[in-house]
Image 1 (cartoon, rainbow, N blue to C red):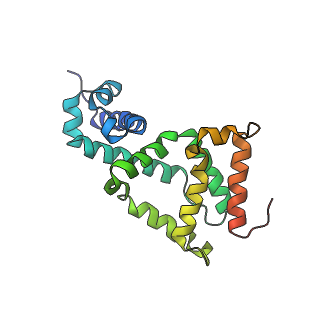
Image 2: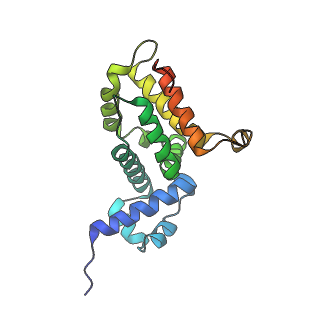
Image 3: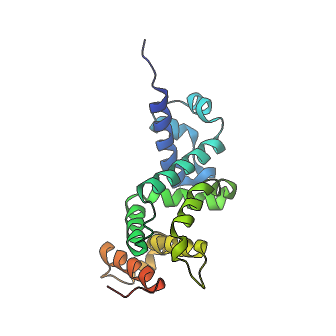
Amino acid sequence: MVQRDAEATRAKILSAAREEFAAHGHAGGRIDRIARVADSNVRMIYAYFGNKSALFDAALTDAITRMAEAVPPLPDDLPRWVGELYDFHHEHPDVLRICLWAQLERPEAASEPLEAYATKAEAIRSHASAPFSTVDLLVIIYAIAQAWQTAPLGLLAADPGATDASRRRAAIAAVARILGHAPE
């Protein structure tokens, strides 16, 4: 008899759910597609997560947690941190996409990982000064890091010479200027 690895199965389901919900949102995401990609079945998904909304919320929390672990704040070098966030969003667009879907379709789920944001706010508190609160500074840093992922393609096409490297440098320079650092 084949022994099931419950944690491995759960991880495969979460990975498939992140991809599915990032591509289609909560409303458009299909449990049968998730089951197929995870090499599982619908019954198993419901056994692990209860319902579609709980699976979406778990996939969202997993995505945000992965980002928080991969790109922790660099309180002593916030411009470098925005560059690392830019890289993360470029390499893992599914994380930003599932977060955007959550804001649109399940805002109650998007506010769940408050602890992660509270920890980040505390880490950069000493760098916030008028007119910015700590949360203002975090929002601005995230907005800059994510800007090219959410910008209209026509706008990005208006600068045919731009590269990922030049956009990354622009993000770093923007945060440095906001913080009053000399440009590099």
